[in-house]
Length: 186
Image: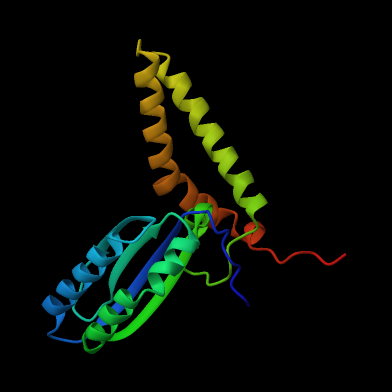
């Protein structure tokens, strides 16, 4: 199935899983750092991070974000990146790249390789989750005499954290049959 193109002005997150050649881990870390430093100089770069494997032989994961697909493409087609990748080729046994945009990160299930659900379904699930959390947290915080600025900050941080790590992973699993249902033919 063809990958849906992301809108050009929507942030995009890229995860790259690389299996590193045995004994080349320190060289790979230096290579990855150089690649990240180079990316920071490109327009639209929002950040990057590296997750080291839990065990020898498992992939290293590099996650980076750009503010738009357009800026990501400019980085990916840059001569500087091509040069660095060529120099680091001997360090890597295999590479797997995944791109996600916007709400798709909340709906990514480890067991699914299908495209993201339709945006209207992601919107509906997100609204229900955010509304429920906002309501519950605002009611709970009324018990305390917090200034409105502090209360809004607490709710924003709590809703974001709860949606990211608790609500959406569970909602995506619970509703996966509906979210990923093939469109009905008329």
